[in-house]
Image (tube, rainbow, N blue to C red):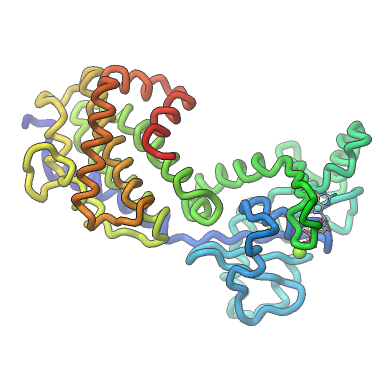
Length: 379
Ligand SMILES: Nc1nc2c(ncn2[C@@H]2O[C@H](COP(=O)(O)OP(=O)(O)O)[C@@H](O)[C@H]2O)c(=O)[nH]1
Ligand SMILES: [Mg+2]
């Protein structure tokens, strides 16, 4: 087993990774959407969360008690809270001093404006900046300028001045037409700029380890699972070449299992359970010791060439795809027969492609071909 593999160091490294994931999954995400009545706040929220007017709108997703007229508060899942109001001042006013502090530690503020610049919005913007970790400014209804596109830069510039934006502060331009529940059913959706806004919100939340919590409420589970697997494969692709890589790979696999479990169930899997799944995928019997698993497919020297790295990647992809498969098909991590069967099936397909080729795809960092590979196993 050499000096590169030692159960204690694997355990420490794995715990470190799992502690971090666990901490992130138990975080709350709060979003405050502020803007004049009819600026398009509700429409933007629905578009951001991929709800269309025929689905139950956010407004119906568990409105919280104590709600008064101006401020709408929604809770999505256990950890995401959204407030929608003409101004943050209303949110402050409507809450007792006791709840105010917690409420006003907001992650993401979104100021929604439309039409020509209005200096009255500056106070709302400033208050958002005081209470939110990050504020996004959105100029909605840009379709209003479709017949006169050249006026958009002027309108944007006027808003920049009205809000006194700095060089680094952006104005996102969106259209969310047709996302309002009152729109006629034959109206076509016209949606623009919302993906860019959503991507920027995720990028910001990722810095705080909160992106998965929001993604769970916002995106298709399989899309999130693919992203988790992408991250895990990229990590293994790097870790495989570090001498003694086994100590890192087990942690990466267990962390991805925790994240996938959270995506489908909304619950935080215990670190112990995440690690306990791993020995199931070993080809030979290794008992209940997850930490011997990496060793079972890594060369005894602990130093990997490209083919050995490919094997580590194959095992990781087959394992995580099997975990995704059980959730997609109504099973769970207790269904060991299904997990094992799917793992073997996926692994066989990957072995046919070949370890070197698989390693080459992952190490290339070419997002498109990596996603193509993952999409063979996840729809
Ligand atoms: N032209 C246009 N109208 C929009 C757009 N987004 C929303 N609307 C309309 O603007 C009105 C107000 O939208 P709503 O989302 O209820 O605004 P809120 O009061 O800020 O929540 C509704 O009639 C929407 O159909 C857009 O991008 N373009
Ligand atoms: Mg509204």
